[in-house]
Amino acid sequence: MERVSYFDKMEATDKGKSTAKVETRVAVDVRTSTDSVYVNAGQKYDVKWPGGGSPLVQLTSRTWLFWNPQDNGRNISDMEDDGW
Image (cartoon, rainbow, N blue to C red; front, side):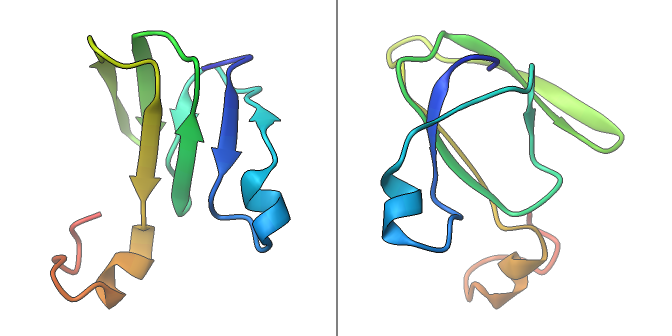
């Protein structure tokens, strides 16, 4: 996703959430709680986590949403404890 604009919804302020950033990583990294929206992105990307990863392909949209609550998922009523 390197050089793709995105919005980090984990930012603490509304201004931070609505300010576009530019991705510097080659692959999306979901080692921490993640809620990012990538705009005008390509169709193929890799997501990485410790010990693994997965290639993703999207055919109809140029917007990607990556969400992973990590341990905070335990606080979501309809999510399994280790569902993240």
